[in-house]
Image (cartoon, rainbow, N blue to C red; front, top):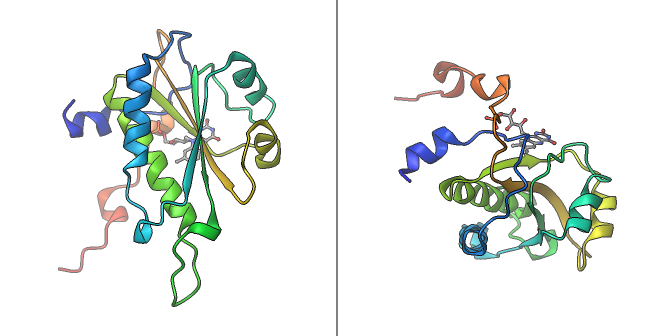
Length: 171
Ligand SMILES: Cc1cc2nc3c(=O)[nH]c(=O)nc-3n(C[C@H](O)[C@H](O)[C@H](O)COP(=O)(O)O)c2cc1C
């Protein structure tokens, strides 16, 4: 798909079909996340890919934003492994995780799938569902799946600040 079409088509999907995702599409999405850039190439990001029905059911206990996606990608980052800016000590892990999550979403869109980034979840309860989360901050739950019939963007999708507000041009 043309890149502009990918970014124009993406919207937050809140109604997923039960249809399974082809394994090669899942691999393509994960590969996009794996090769995303990170600060100083530290790669402090890890993905937990959830497809088991029991685990997906359990996700309902950690967030109110679960809409039946058959694939959930939890994006976590480990600050201890990340680049730290020497000037102010800012840790880059969360920025790296956000880039990876964005790559995952756009790769899914490119594969004809829909996504929803969920940030509103209980991180302690989510960590309880996953192995090997020690030292990780869980940043995002990326829902992935085919959109249900009749799925449409919310009103917020069409609401953005103007270009004038968005950009300060110092020509
Ligand atoms: C960091 C982040 C956290 C978000 N958390 C949630 C969430 O917890 N629940 C939800 O329904 N949508 C969530 N969203 C989706 C936003 O509400 C959505 O991206 C925004 O309203 C713009 O709509 P659009 O994605 O359809 O263009 C989140 C998006 C981002 C980027």
